[in-house]
Length: 240
Image: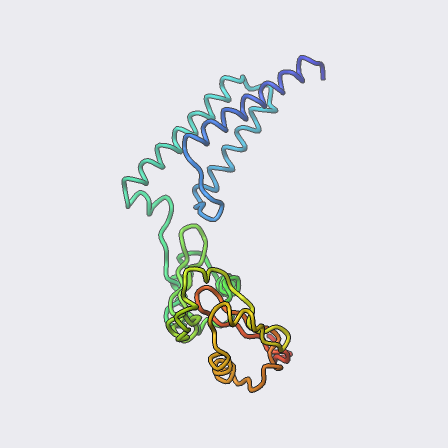
């Protein structure tokens, strides 16, 4: 390969890169988690076109650039149409579909999303749900994510539910804090947030914990959720 060929490839690659950069800025960008299947496929296609323009010197540079611009023009046109037309948006991007209701898996709806039960269980576990019976509603979104609303019995307690002292709801209370570490109460954190020992002991007793020494870690979040982890947890040996 002579210097002229190398220079040609450098020129083509640089030109393709900057044209893509400009066009991407024009059509906007989304987070990876927000990409629909259409976004994903068009992204791969555009990348492939740019790669061909960069390395295939048999294709005239202007022809390759014209192809790239036309492709982006269609993407912009379709994006504009989907912004204005709900039916077009549903057709191109797809629609959310409920796949679990009141703890029951909706098999027919799973089929509409080309899900199987294993796919659903995997996504539930990724969202911290190991029992479908805990789910009030689960919706398979158009971008492939799974949105979950747990039943009220399985939702974390709020500040109101826990009846926290008023001082713990102040604006300064913006990060979670440890209340117990390795069986020892962190007195300064109780004082800082105005939490009484009696309140803490009541919460421990409600979880069947009679002695603080049984607790490995207890933290409280800005939302008022009390997290407890015992030193000796009972874990089943067989998880199948």
